[in-house]
Length: 221
Image (cartoon, rainbow, N blue to C red; front, side, top):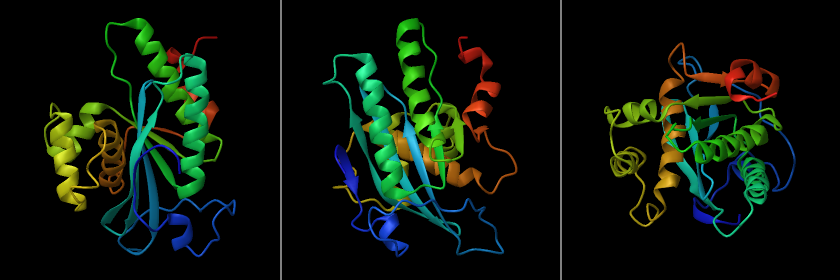
């Protein structure tokens, strides 16, 4: 797979006995104590217009392990619209490589720069669209929620989140040599893993129509 990141030698596709490149989709399953061996793949995304982070977790029962994490580098593309196209292309490629059952995506942090927030929102929307095109349910988490779930502190730094993920997932020092955007994305995936056993999570979307219905304030008609 192109781009910057770390990939664990085995892929989710091969581990399930499916030849590389075969198009298929896994049934969506819910982890339960009665079915502790059901496997689920979670894709985490940290939206960005210069760097977009991604992290992939395999979950079996109450244990999670790292499959891959990295960043999609977008700085070299001058056109914002070209960057959006590359985001869709790369997220789709990652989805087709790992066949995630669900996506967890970090909600944009709203700042004072309106133009920057508009571009970031578009980038997030393109990533969401790539998942919807593959019928993958999406859950959106606020940055503070992710930090709280992983470190117990909603104001934790990116470095603190990365350090905690390294310890919890037993990631080697060499594999942690990535951009913090990648560990932020992995944090979204791990937060979703933690939340799976709880009755309610953040904003969930099952289709583009569902996303528009729940985000009318973000959609300009």
